[in-house]
Structure formats: structure tokens, C-alpha cells
Amino acid sequence: MNKTNLIKKVSEIVDITKNDANIIVSAVVDSIIEGLCEDGKVTLSGLGSFNIVTRGPRTARNPKTGESVAVPEKEIVKFKMSSLLKERLN
Image (cartoon, rainbow, N blue to C red; front, side):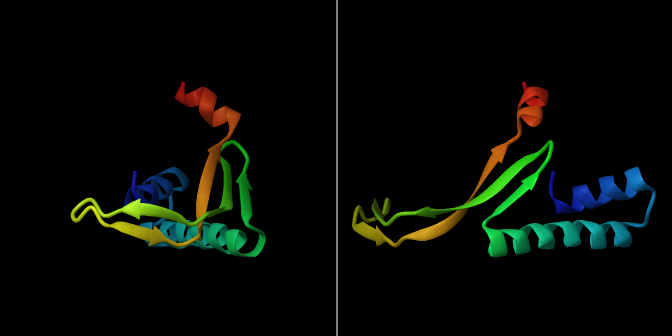
């Protein structure tokens, strides 16, 4: 499911226009991003948690040339699903 499909689904479930659903979905996504930037963690009950993790520097290989490339340290977002989601998927 992509953002367009999510907007359509929200508009159908809540019985609102797609434009209003777009505003709601965008507000939720923006709030998650803001929460990650401020606190480094966002937890949504029943879904899971998003955490910012620092990935250390490493050496990678360019598959085209075989040349070694230094990859600097960077922050990434990891998602850990809740036990409820895990049960529903399995």
C-alpha cells in the first residue's frame, strides 16, 4: 500500500473527501517525522516503534568497478513491530 492508497482507504472508512484524508495522512506522517527529529523515538500502540539508530562507518565495494568505498557514519530509522502486529501477520 502506498500513500495514495492509504488516503483512499482513510477517506472510505471515515467517509470524508480524499482531500481531507490527504490532510490527515500528511499530518500523521509529519508528526511522526517531527517526533523522530525531537525525541529519536515514536511508538504507535498496536503498530510498533520507530527509532533513530546510528550506523557506524564501514567500507563497502562498488560492484561495477570492484573499488573499495568508505561509507561514513549516518543515522537511520529502524522499525520494530508490536507483538499485536506480529500476531496478526502470523
